[in-house]
Amino acid sequence: EAEVAQSPRYKITEKSQAVAFWCDPISGHATLYWYRQILGQGPELLVQFQDESVVDDSQLPKDRFSAERLKGVDSTLKIQPAELGDSAMYLCASSLTFTGQETQYFGPGTRLLVL
Amino acid sequence: SQQGEEDPQALSIQEGENATMNCSYKTSINNLQWYRQNSGRGLVHLILIRSNEREKHSGRLRVTLDTSKKSSSLLITASRAADTASYFCATVYNNNDMRFGAGTRLTVKP
Image (tube, rainbow over all chains, first blue to last red; front, side, top):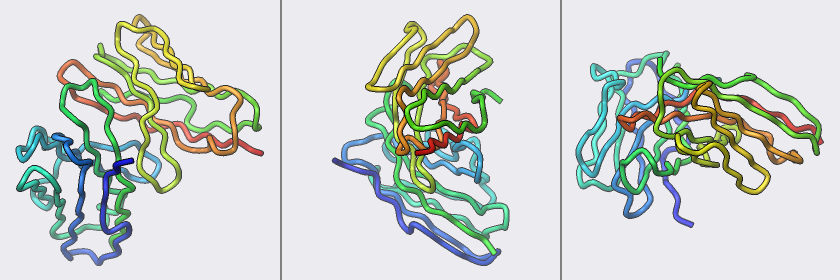
């Protein structure tokens, strides 16, 4: 069964350093999502792509976070500089289309710890 | 915030018992989805129920939706230790905006 791949699974960094997360969605899925999940809370959408275009990045802290999906396939989320409050699980998900009626398929996540 | 709110925050039951989790929301939705998350892992989709549906079943899962009360419930029957996880409702609004609640942490004791 096809899965969403994410790497790394775990990342420890010091504050002010740069970090990057990678996501490879299920083949053929046009829509890709990045979520941040703080311990004990539900996922919060950071950015949503339709193919290579950003559909929603209203919750992305643009002063330090950036995301790209250059060829409309895999995607990278970057944080520079990292802050202590960025410690969280970063989840990537994909769906076939973007109608609101479809299932989102999640990757295993990248757990980030900022020291 | 538009996100749904789950209740209870945590639930502990014995294997074989039924588990019921509730989700309430504030504005009209297009559909509501339930997801499960095992500790430290990604989310897995369980059921999607549309605003014009009242009940859906999938194996041991039963989801109801009451749009007049703006609430949904997830029932897991004959629970197993493997059902131990966090369960999230996600409300999808007519602008396709999807918001997750804070989740219910279910513990099923063997």
